[in-house]
Length: 441
Image (tube, rainbow, N blue to C red):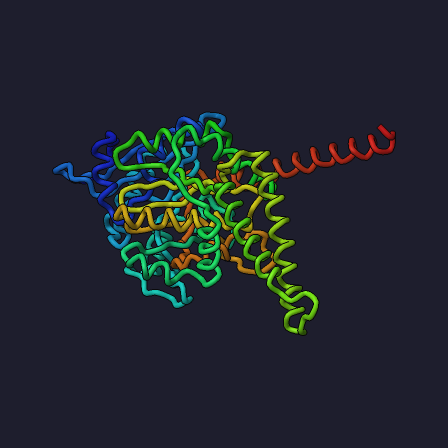
């Protein structure tokens, strides 16, 4: 007789970390972060048999609503063999029984199930399971699919890029695009470097996240959120959060530019200025252009050194490790010296780090399915694509509705009401601005 029980951290983690579908979003640490920073109640559940062997697990996060209602979200879960229909059926019945006792409106799941997988050459890869059969099984059990969305409409991205770290490092880097290889090489040539940060570097990381988000016109989390995430994930045995800081040593860069300028001046000095051939004139013109560029670069770097100091952090990434996988969760970049391409070099360094640690999967955590050139996130997609990972599309979200009237109110009427309120607020602000301008204030 199988039953659903609450699991302590040790039992829960010991099962989860060994599963192929282990995911940081199902980890004990993520549940604790959701509790502390998102006001959600985590439930660590396990389906056990008569001998108390764990057959499946689920971290489900409870969101409390007015009138004592709630809804539940199981990020990238359940952790179960989805091809075992009998087991999935039992798990569903037990989960629904549990959430109904909590006055749930619905349960949302978005399993770590790949719908389509394309390699770096855009060739579709064969999946290790029959995804269409699993899709039909979920629907037959009462789960309502939320559609094959193309952007970031869902709780977690439906698309990502994943690098198989079972390949050799040489194979992985051979899959980088030509442009990516060139930009990493340029970053190295300019004496940029990447180092692993500590908790004291969270402030710098947050500063770069704010710069990045301001450019993209959105703000996600405050500094304390990132610090809490860092502390929680570094407090567990199976999880880890690591900061990678891409930096430039301005003095070293200036030395290289000045050495280059000296070499240019030497070349100019040996040209017979009084009797130049056509080719010599062209060479002088090019050398003069290079000299001007060097002087501009020297002026620029000296200005930045005065403003920011010698060792300037241009890129800061946070990756999360769980079990045998890693995810690039957040990346912030400065809005200066982008021509150094430190961002590319930082990515290369944490790919190497994950490979050397013996991890199996490197996930860039999120891209788009709408690849139209006017999509504002197309540039981000192209950046990630150039690192040569598999382009992965997940099956998507499913809702199991337990209270149809309230589900309609919550998913249809409430968003509609919020939209009206937002539009009214926007109109009020626009009128205030208009009236202020008309009054000349």
